[in-house]
Length: 297
Image (cartoon, rainbow, N blue to C red; front, side, top):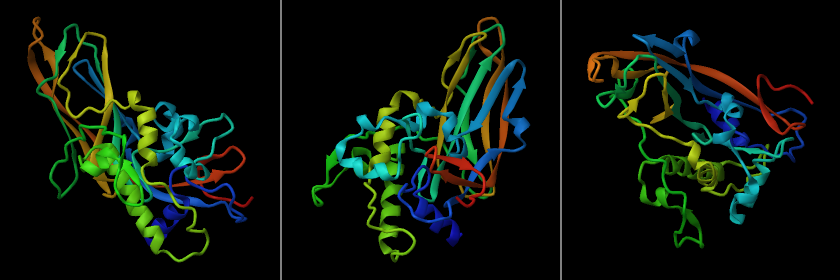
């Protein structure tokens, strides 16, 4: 665990490596993330209603440019120091994984519900929870948060409003993780990497603000889904990715209605999540992280 934390700090995981490193070894970030297990259970159909779950994890970040890529020209100047951690790739895009920071990641999934019945599905009674053995069920985060920078009175430092309000939003959690990492890094002795590469707390919130329209957070399914239409969104839970096993539970999902659209049959869907160990190494040529084991330059 200590080795994992140290490597995460040195790399400022994900997309957080200095391109000026002189090390002959390509640093590798080792971390844990969730995956639906077995993979075949990620898509389930009951009574012509289909649920699909994709875990949003660091190794899949490049598959979601609408969430994790950003334009440096739209980032406030005060965060320019972070450019050494988030360089532009060969396509001119910079990337920042925004569901965690350092060695702490929140549990996030993209969910798609498809109605293949001939009637409107009213989902107002449906509920979704993350269930971890030995813990109380966890409800999803309901608020993306406010990334607007506010003065703190501390050396003219500005921080996101949601962090200062401690509103339990995604912006709040991300900024909290950034601050915790910064405080821990200050205590580390100088060694493989210079701690003079200060990280500007609040940066991730600005990436979120830039991509805000893509972050459709849902905490329940109080919607109507028309026949042959789908409902899709992100379920984000304030639970650190750390438990060996967890379950994403959907309760009281309407699978059959009468001609008027009233529920006559409901069921539950269960998606098992399993902790997996992953490695990623930074390719200095393409300026992107790649999954796998680090190797010599």
